[in-house]
Picture 1: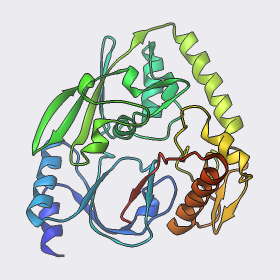
Picture 2: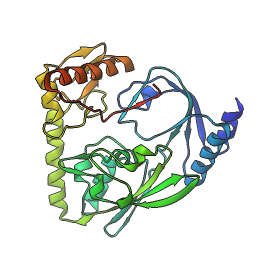
Picture 3: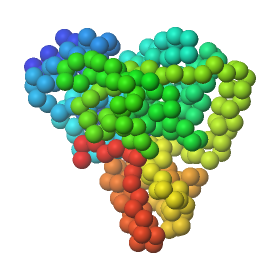
Picture 4: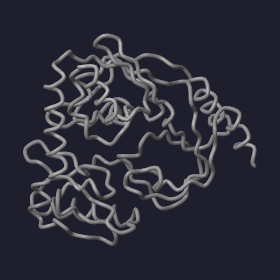
Length: 297
């Protein structure tokens, strides 16, 4: 056991040589040298201080649902927030830690007869991840409900008002400041009839099951929608439905999903992404930008 691992173990559980393919929904990625699992803010702060002391690269990870990891080893520390999964209801307010599943949380809101997270009931991500991306669906997104974000930055924990988070279409201030780490989020919801909430969620679940390849590893929608036309129409227009590159395939069910059809490598996935971007630019003169984040390239 080396000195870095010994130091990390003082504050959290540590695993070594963990395949990132087991920590992402795409099931792609090389091995991480260290994965640590802090279970409270004191533990987390201790881990981050050790990382700074040893000056090693790090990545904070939730569900890994929007991440394309390279196939090469990551010689650094992955800080998993999966144990930051507590949440608290206070009338119409909800405070949830960054590691909470947004799907599970939306169903807890249903039980509390609180409306506002129905759109997120099918997003396979954590609270931290959906806040970082300002994830959305059905013409709503996280910015519509977020009042504040509890952030770790410059070695301190502090609340950042939602108005200062610079939320936009699939963007937030946290993408500009990757060293600002989302620890928890406060949301404001609205009381509504539980039956009405359930009907909305059931209807949207049926739509997702009918239109999305939920049985295949993926990162969800790969491309952001341009202003005037949805990305899927552009991909359909270049004839890429079902197109493959190695083990990566444009889903025949939803062309803005690229699925890991057969042990795809990171290069397979990225090559297919770049082919689509080139073909769309050539045919339509439109640049497609990805939602998925590249890591360790």
